[in-house]
Image (cartoon, rainbow, N blue to C red; front, side):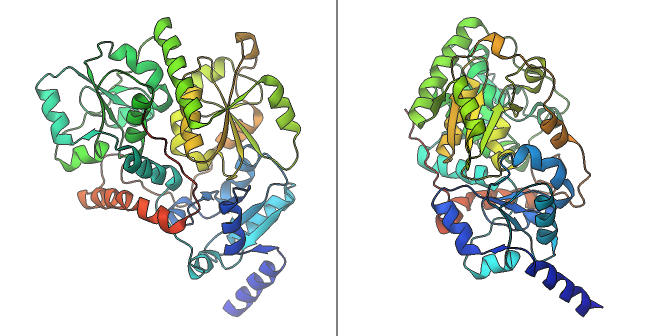
Length: 434
């Protein structure tokens, strides 16, 4: 029976076009479009995959394809570890109308055999970039013990938590205020109007706190800014207590603060090489052949649902930077961002540009342009729930990870810069501080 199954798998594989390590690497090095889709479930994906392999589970393929693979002739390579899932995914994509679909020959074992670097965990491109950025920019940080001492002493400080609000409610640093990612440059000045007030930025681990702190520094806030070193993980490893069920969040942003934040963010985006787009460009790009364009609204979901620019999908900016490959699996594609204040889109774009994405922000919009309400059908499909067969339990998620697991996760993050160097396909270029 086993021999029959193996023969069937071999015949199935032979019926599909195949691609190898040299093909994928050449695409990445030349910054050409390619979607390398790891169609395994999240847990095996997290056990090892190429840097830019986007997790695209077979069980969700039909739901995710329309929103995440908008160009039907984009080069797609399906990837697994020899289970036969890549062949099944290729068949389904071809049936959906995608024309340039191939299977990665030999799966993960062939990638390794060819000398390809493999990465564990999820959202690795963003996490690796965060480590590279800290090494290049020397983003200031304080240990958990130092921050706890400041809080206990009643220091003039604000703790800004840049995770999603639901993560903040699960566990948070005492006195922390929820200001999710892309909101930080827009909202923080009103939380710390005195320029001598210290701002501490935290997340669960490292990446988002480093990006958030460096965002404030890049934007030129006069306050002293630092990240909480190793985030909530570092706090727990220092045997300090977290809070649970908190709801502290930023309030209404004043008009002068919003206007100043927009100017600051635009200056950062210009330094990072972000492109400028107009409404007419959107129509031209939508009709362009041989080019993938992602259009994202980086405001909150609630703002998007009330009114948005037609054709744009909602992804809050902080999560887009943290989980880019989840929303834009076609590496080398164009990304276009929009907001209604100028701060959130420009700050998000500045990070994507440093991560080697061709990134644009749409200028010249008025309130009348935000004429759509609710959600586009593609996004509704993508949000439909399919229970994962094997979900990866993140060490920074919840409160039940062991100290050994949390420390191992931090040690892995510290090693990402070396892995980037060995892989050599990233093109990341962290921008020096102002």
